[in-house]
Length: 161
View 1 (cartoon, one colour):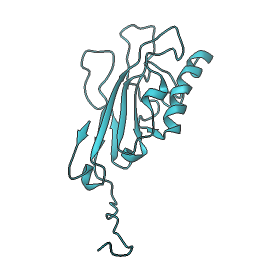
View 2: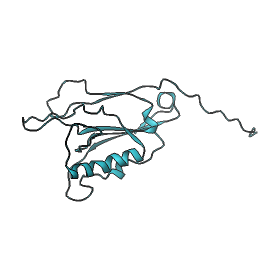
View 3: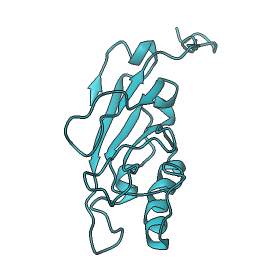
View 4: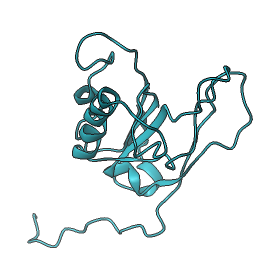
């Protein structure tokens, strides 16, 4: 967790949490190593959840054909994210994994979600860097102050003195 006494970009949020995810396949529900409810919960401060989800979903990869099981498993994660509420940062259809074999097609397995408290600070999501030798590419998320910063709330009630 990142703590800032001045607040993130001058906002009232003094902390930022980044959760890096690598979901493994399992044989028991939710069929991944971390349940969606553990990843996505309402937090009053900015939160970024990102990593290799090992999931296929049409919102991230609209041209991919999914099995019913793939869709059911991934939908639990996307629904939990949107209910919390988190926003998908990926540009739909921009691949994040390029397999080394010639049989498999590229896919979108590396996902990034920002909660509402962080969304106004997200400037971009991109994959501009060269390959690292892995079958996954690096994803870059740029944060900056929102274009319009609201002034701090002023106390307008009766004097407390």
